[in-house]
Length: 110
Image 1 (cartoon, rainbow, N blue to C red):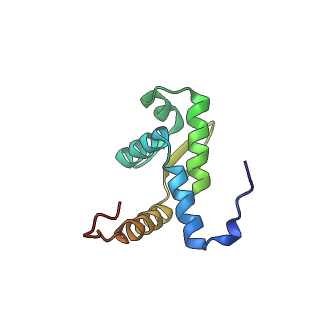
Image 2 (image 1 turned 90 degrees about the horizontal axis):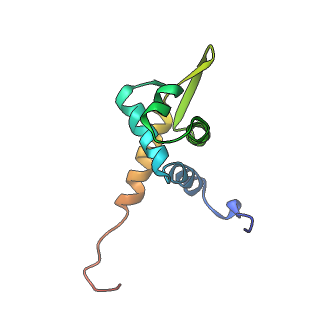
């Protein structure tokens, strides 16, 4: 696979792509739904909700954290995860602007 030429894209496009990549797996979407419903969650609780191993859930949590959509606090041996409100709002706004840019054409162009 080739090297991505990130300097050829705007910062807005790079950030939007980061959020989209984080959302591009059904397990991550499910984790986000759990966190949205509970307002916060301990990793072990997330594992109980999904048909995935602890290590797989941890990897998905890592991806979501690296994208900035969630944050986690260490509490003894457990990590409590929750939605990162600032990044969540930014992602929501960026996706809304991106999708609202579509204007339906009245011709049969495709």
